[in-house]
Amino acid sequence: MMIAVIFGMAMSVSAQEVSESKYGADSVACVTNLSIYGEAYKQWEAAKFAPEAATTEMVNAWRAVFLNCPRSSQLIYTRGEKIMDYFIRKNPAQKDAYIDTICMMMDSRAQYFPVDPKTGKSQVAGIMGRKGLLIYTYNKNRYEEAYNVLKDAVALDASQLQGAYIDAYFKATIDMVNNGKAEKMTIINVYQELSEVLDNNIGALATTETELETAKEEAVASGDADAVAGFDKQLEKNEKNININKGVKNNLDNLFQPFASCDDLIKVFSAKMKETPDDVTLLKRITTILDKKDCTESKLFLDAAVRLNELEPSPEASYSLGIKFFKDKKYSEAATFFEQATKTDNNDRKYRAYRNLAMCYQNMGSLGRARDIARRAAQVDPTAGEPYLIIAQLYASSASQFSGDIESKAVYWAAVDKCIKAKSIDPSIADRANRLIGSYTAGFPSMETIFFNDYSEGQTFHVGGWIGETTTIRARK
Image 1 (cartoon, rainbow, N blue to C red):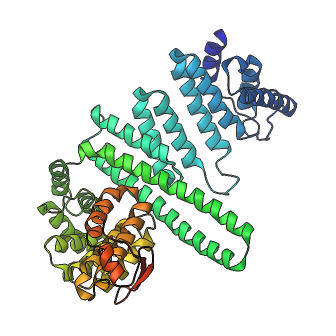
Image 2: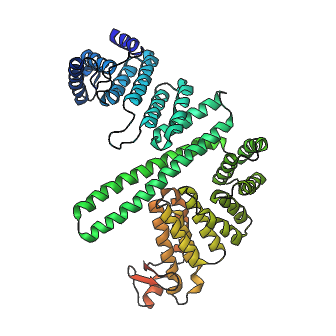
Image 3: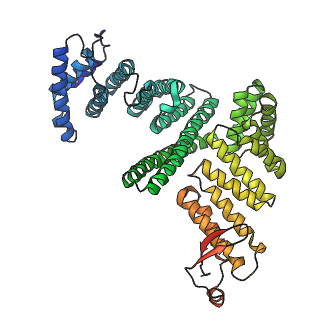
């Protein structure tokens, strides 16, 4: 259709200076066009955006509003995206012209609606993030443009970026490196930057979850059913957001994997550290990524950890030294550094510090202390299942501390309970949990032992001693 070509050409021309008025220099024309395109758009929407329902009248009226009264409503831009999507799908040969229009729309929205009216906070970074996502989505050959837009959006305010924007940014970064427009170190830097963004998002959401749970408990105690229902909805939404961020993080890890062999990372990082051995940001990046990728046996990791601690003693530096001592099985020294590392503001690092600290006490035989620390790790990240696996192993390892046919076996019931909880909140560790369950189930008492001790399956049982847990009696199958 000729309209598609004309429209794409017209919109590629920058809009003229518009009136400061919300409705532009000609408010009557603006209100008229708002009504025309608004009603037509609603009909198109009701028709589930069928091509035949996208009228020339709607497009022309929308265009007039955008060019002449861009301050009139944010719907101009959200609906404009849908209109551009329609034209791109209908006329793929003209998609670059429509992408240019999208870019102009996003710039205009950022100019005229820099503040989110719902929150009162800047939304410019989020708008630019969406701009970069749409560029990359519609034409991956424009990866360099998308990369630069998304890079700027992260620099503005990374907290505004949705998961899809982060995913697009990292993919565009990989394209930059694969096409020789950026060095491999760029992938490493962006990976670390985005990982921190996602960790912070997950940490903030975990804190919100704890606050909502507390508020819900208070509402339950007061008998306020409406408040309880409201908190349930908020918790559901919060949990969905946690899962979205975790999903993006997993995808980020998968995309990074081809660039993340220990040999490859050590080669790249060694060269960089040789150039700038006192670059604290680089040292933090080296220790963090080598830890995540389990490359901590290398001399590079130790050198970076020691140098980081010399230049900037901090929870991050302490964490890295804790890893080194843990690998050397010097658990007491490692515990000292992990304890210091828990003072970090980085929620993911705090969780890992507590988790590792629990394992230090586990290896030192301080089972009660290890459980206390593992519980703290679970509080820091309520979506992590590993702390419960640690507790399960602590319980199972203490069987010899209990006497009696039932008492010495009851620890395995409690251990299996923790494994079940672990995989229920963190499916990523289900395989490990199931292996432990299989091992611990073999330690259950037989049906005969349960019977001759005057118990029966399904009864509750209190495990005494340092464990102090109530569990359910189960027989070995």
